Image 1 (tube, rainbow over the protein chains, first blue to last red):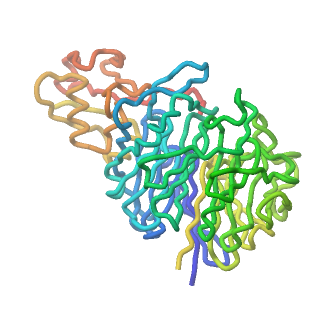
Image 2 (image 1 turned 180 degrees about the vertical axis):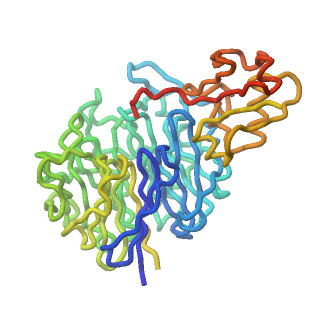
Image 3 (image 1 turned 135 degrees about the horizontal axis):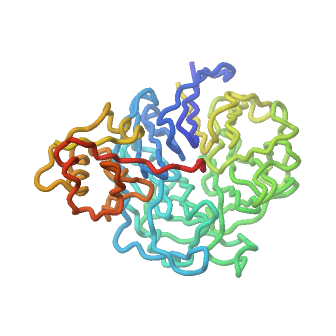
Length: 371
Length: 100
């Protein structure tokens, strides 16, 4: 019988939530790595028992953990993330140039095909890869070597590479996103990159249509239609129908188009989910109502999903990596909040219930659908 | 024999209980102690000092004999009481001030 495993990264540890396919009764495992920030943990599509976790701390730096048994046991692997060559400089908050300096791994993206290959998106923004199960990490320097690096600048949360999307139909094609540089694409497995930000408009930039500098928050793709991308930007929900070649806005009737996370239904490539957040300085839902918005039309027309979610006095945030979709026949949707709740819907968002209510602040949520 | 006391998070990471006892070749310095510590427990590499620059991480402190040795040069000799194992070399996570 199918089951699901939800991987939750929080400010104070990792949790593994498991259920059968009904997704009504849950076992809560953890905390793993208690006291450490777990920005992200994710399983390998090629070997679901192989998990990787980014464990970090302001005191003790970066650790990468690996599990070979679905999260029951873990062991640290390599944590040396050294930029290739001379790191160079990027733009700092005051407009001066600032040396690149590694801070932490924001996102781990295991290869679609090989459990030992994982991409890591880091702060200060760069893309690393391991091909030996995490023992060693090498930068893919073509991204920072694109030439626009000196114009990249940190967002409020740091200059982070937080989104890595693999195109299953073009093995050499990756999309990444950086706050605040924008989206980039490679078609040759990371050797060369180009910015894919045409159509984005960001009023916080001197040139709102600049080639780079946009604060992209997250990009989502349905694997059956990899040329179509959905983006939650700092403001604006966007869509590309040509693999990032150009973008157009699909915010439509959303109550606010600010937000962090975005994802796509497992079986309906045109069904998209966002969680609107009031504004860039008010990081909570509008009107104190926690609502997921679903578009079944690929954008522009959105419906509020509220059943089972708090509809008054709710002032939590949902971060960029904190929503995930399972692939059971009745598609499950999950998200975690900065208030420590993890909500699940077993009916594609029609109704919701909390799996847990009192975890530390949630940084990331991933889900694995297991046979 | 030099005694090193690690903070709880690093003890768990290295899977050690209590103090670590290290044999250090040559003069007992911060660098020699940390080199020996990381050689014994490679998982601690990068958690106390930077992989590349070998500089102490900003929120790590080194105390011994009721003194703050954090700002001593890495090759400065440690107090005799540390070098002879009478007093431990303390690796400390700086106080958070309640920010996280």
